[in-house]
Structures are given as structure tokens and as C-alpha cells.
View (cartoon, rainbow, N blue to C red):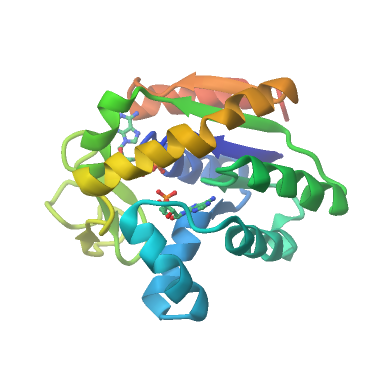
Length: 216
Ligand code: ADP
Ligand code: AMP
């Protein structure tokens, strides 16, 4: 299965993608995670991406498309993958179609986790991530058993630099301008499915699995 996980920042894409990885045994490819790793490691890519991420704007298409093209060519993507947070612009979506047709693959399904804007700042500001294993928590909606400690691996939880109200306003504006148009784009392609992301984390997972049961 070649799945795209779409939705505004803080909708629950990463949380749900991590669960689907375990169930379907295909890799999660998050461009946000790839950029954050590059920033941490201080690579040339990280240096390019950092200012855009800190200000809440999108990293330029040519940079983003390049890293996805390389990643999708890796062996572990042969049996399918979950793209999380890519594409985010029409240009990225057009490039993805080209990359997939070069690889002889198609898009199985676009899973759009739909959440209204008034939920999203609280979700993002309360997000905490494990430094060691990358598991995602929320201080209110999915709290770890011990504050600031990962349930899965005991790692320390941190807050992303861009998970503040000010940057979220810009990220939401970038979503409205550049990414929301992809809903119609993928509706026209006949691969679009919408999931109500206002529901609990477990209920969203159930709905996703119901959709995917028919696609396998
Ligand atoms: P995205 O990858 O779309 O930016 P995340 O999966 O990281 O979003 O989720 C953002 C925050 O909201 C996290 O702290 C996560 O624990 C929490 N969250 C995810 N899904 C839900 C949900 N259905 N209800 C409440 N909180 C959620
Ligand atoms: P995310 O982890 O998906 O919330 O992404 C964090 C930040 O990384 C975004 O605000 C962008 O600056 C950058 N980013 C992630 N994915 C993309 C993408 N597909 N296109 C452009 N920028 C991206």
C-alpha cells in the first residue's frame, strides 16, 4: 500500500502513521521528521530547512521533493509506505505522481485527517516527543504515565521549537494557502478519503483501519 497521510499541522498524522506502521509493517516517511533530524545533525539540508521551519513556512519544493525522491527509492519502500506530511503543495503532488510512475507504483489512498482550526493550536502546543524513540504524546490528550518520560523506552520528552501559538498561526496559514487545495486535487484523482480527526486517537485509528481493510 502506498498511503498519504494528510491534514493540517497537529491533526494527528504522525500519531496515526506510527500505529499503521506497526499494523501493516511499512515505513512511515515524515518529511518533518527528516528535516528535524537534519537540523539536529547540522547537515547542509538542516541548515537550509531550519529558518523555514522556525518561522512556520514551508521548506521550498525543490529541496523537499529531492529528499522524498531519494527516500522512496530505498529498498524498504518496495512493499509500500506511508507518506506523512508530504505532499503539501500542488507542485509536490505533481512531482510525487511522476516519482511513483517512474517506480511503477500508484497511490493506494489519501487519508485526510480533518480537524477544524480551533483544535489545532492546543494539540500542537501540548505535543511532547520522545528524544530517543520519537513517540508522540500530549500533555492532556495522551499523557505519559510519568511526566516528561516516554512510556515505551524511558526517554526524555521534549517540545518542538515550532510548537508555539505564534508559529502555529503561520503554519495554519501555510496549510490553508498551499495544502488545502490538495483535497480537491486528490478528490479528482479518486483516491481521497476523509477521516474525522476530532474523535479520540483510538477512534481515528479504528476508522483508518476500516478504510484500509478494503484497500489491501
Ligand atoms: P501531526 O503529525 O498531524 O502534526 P501529531 O500526530 O503529532 O500531529 O498530533 C499532534 C498532537 O495532538 C500530539 O500531541 C498528539 O498526541 C495529539 N493528538 C493526536 N491525535 C489526537 C486526537 N485524535 N485527539 C486528541 N489529541 C490528539
Ligand atoms: P511537520 O513535522 O509535518 O509539522 O513539519 C514541520 C515543518 O517542516 C513544517 O512547518 C515545514 O517548515 C517543514 N516541512 C515538513 N514537510 C514539508 C513539506 N512537505 N513541504 C514543505 N515543508 C515541509
